[in-house]
Length: 442
Image (cartoon, rainbow, N blue to C red):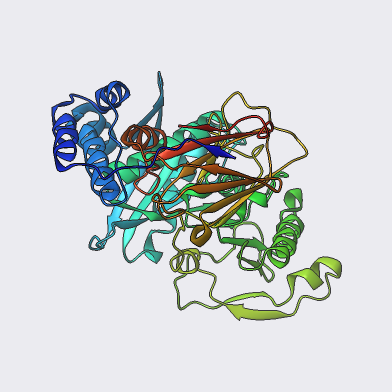
């Protein structure tokens, strides 16, 4: 089935110059989008990257010109919603790499305690992982509440999502090397945030926390380090850490190459004695076979391992365009329904029994949708498909032919939506259960 016969013509030099003049003249990035809604520019494969870079630089220029936003950021304040703000500390270590600084975000312990207790925990986290970092930005946010779930309630999710965008746009961060770490209540936060913020993360490290039943499905492309003390029995943290690792074991076997993870159970250690910040040369005593220990506590033979969290995270980089995606859309950031190169409309009904499953075959210009979450949107980028050729969208075995039509407007909309240099998409395709009836291309 063919939808549309339009084939992109080569964009003329005059049109490129006109588009660049429009970017320079627009007073705000919102005005850029308004102008493109009135008159869109349709780039071809030869100039998509040029216009993408121009749009991104125009977006960043808005941050540079906003003196109040800059002052807040320098003061460690992030305004994540009307009338709401979060606090964070930030320290820069070493010289800036060409691609930008790696970012390590440390979540403090506490939770379910008076403000002064959580403030003290925040102060400790401002130094906790710092000595393990030789180059990078170390950020310690203060949980926005004093509740037990202070790192992953609705406010925390909005705060951290906004904070990551600010780091990408104002701190010289490498968007493909952002890591999240946490201890105790901060470990609870890592468990919950990593599968919700996976498209923004390179890897995650959880120490001495509890997963509280969060699904591991969304950790497909986020390597996860789990650490706990052998004697950390409160809330069964020790047992539940290993049980969660076994869930990841099962997923890793099912999907070879995905769900990378490591679990360290520190021999004889209680809650406050996980050695996760001792440096890359320190060898900690950990259980040699945590799965066997889970079955029989007497099987606790120890071995030595480097358990420094930063050292474990450091080699990993984000892949913004994984070829295969599995998405449990129930486990998503509050108010955000984006997932790498997929999204779901905010009003879409999420079937509680299904997981979105999709993959692309770049050489074949095919995107295959195996499973739904009610409705899906495919966001298209040249790292996935060739814009000069028609795209085949396969839905439950049936093929639909879609003419690709790159749009500068769609690039601008995706910049505003993602605030991420990697996710500047030039087309969006709506996919729904009634694909036999229609397909919408925007």
